[in-house]
Amino acid sequence: MDYKEVATYILHQQLFAEPNLIRDRRSLVNIPIEGSDVIINKMLDLVLLNIELWEQGKEKEYITQLAEKIGFDPKRIILEFHIRIKPIPKEQVSNSRFKYMLAISEVIKTIHEESTDKVVKLLEKKFKGKKRRDLDLKLQTLSEQNNLEFSLLLNLAILKEYAEIVKAHYPLDIFNEYFEKVLQLLN
Image (cartoon, rainbow, N blue to C red; front, side, top):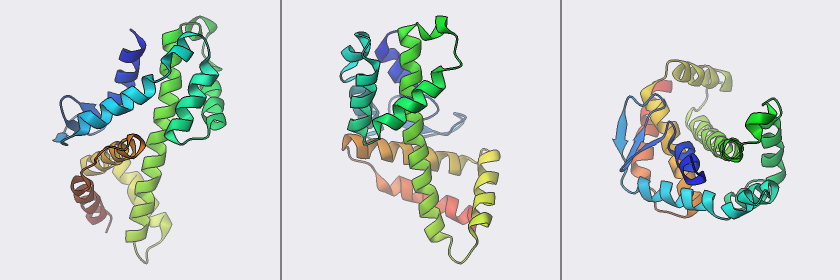
């Protein structure tokens, strides 16, 4: 598996299906999102930019440049990457592509976490006059039940985050539709 295949796999995992489909986390439902392929491909280009640094063994420089382009603190990403590889046997970590998969996974995981946090903050604003603890419990329940609308909303938020990173057009109407569906489930 080459670096492009690794990056493609990580970017598509539990999110995207060709040609323009966003899916829920369990891949039960796909919804067509025009232009999602453009966003994913631009993210792929961004992730593969400066891949020669990784190939030359300049892992820290590669991660630093990628983190900066995405808008993350490189020190944080590098620290999380080192925490992730620490328990892994040296034989596996010596495989450059496997190690690259872990590095890209760390960056993508951070994007996913940030987009999820943004969705939760938007829901908090709309969850007027109610306790934060109630919202947290309801969101936890939706997550545990693998609620399709909630899962799709989170993946649409990730796609939205990717679009912002690569400065691509994003269809807000579909995001807003799923946001309202989830909001109705919470109220």
